[in-house]
Image (cartoon, rainbow, N blue to C red; front, top):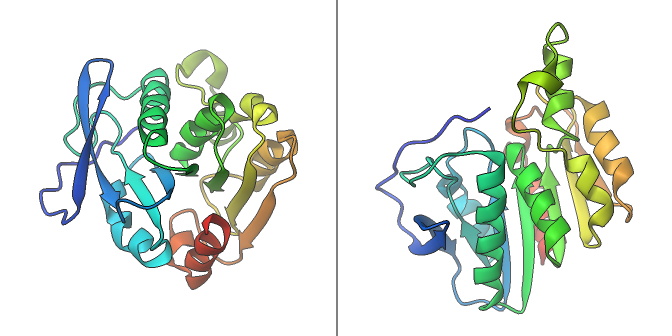
Length: 224
């Protein structure tokens, strides 16, 4: 489930520190000092700093926070569902002190973290890229011979949290997603109490969805 990324010493961006559970976690800030902000949570093997140019280009008037998960990008600690949830809440609370509005974006694994955060804190907008309803359902689909509900410790049951969310919502779906079946995404969509906007990127896969020019336009149009 987790594939930690190595330290990237070549990031040319302003860094920030987050104190969480006694750990010092380091991330990067894009477009610092803006009134509005966005917190981004990446996929299970994603180096979030690689999104620097994307957000610099698409959201010039929004401060974006990129925080590698614990054990990612040289950060200390163990990556678990509970730990990522706590770090997300702590990052939101720290961010809220410096911005008028806070929005949240998650991709793949990060959609579970973003959904949990939005269910516990009031966020302006929630953007989910290739989201799932729960890791148990995904695992059961990929490995039907194994009892996923007995094996998986980290469940990321976003569908249970969706009814608590009252933010503006955008769901971005890869039309040829080979990792997240469409039925699992649509099950999540059905549980939100506010009907989300849904964009399907036809012909794109789980990882190639961000290669589309429409991806940039969708982010900019929704967040700004």
